[in-house]
Image (tube, rainbow, N blue to C red; front, top):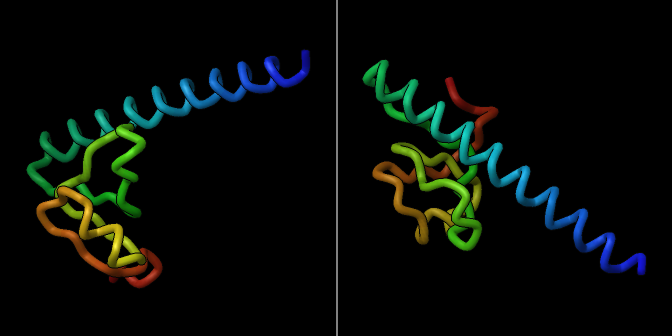
Length: 83
């Protein structure tokens, strides 16, 4: 009885997180488009998640994740070192 309840709660949590990520990305995309500036994504999204696409610029620590992304400007780097 406990296992199905735990699974159900995890599925509900994942669905909520998915919606929040998609909504936040859409708002960020709209703000970037309205300002005429590129959208920067810190950490490339996993292709398997399908939550949101790559942004115009994707800043990622792991070069291997940039290879699979679709960003126009994939960049290896650390957000703590952005000037």
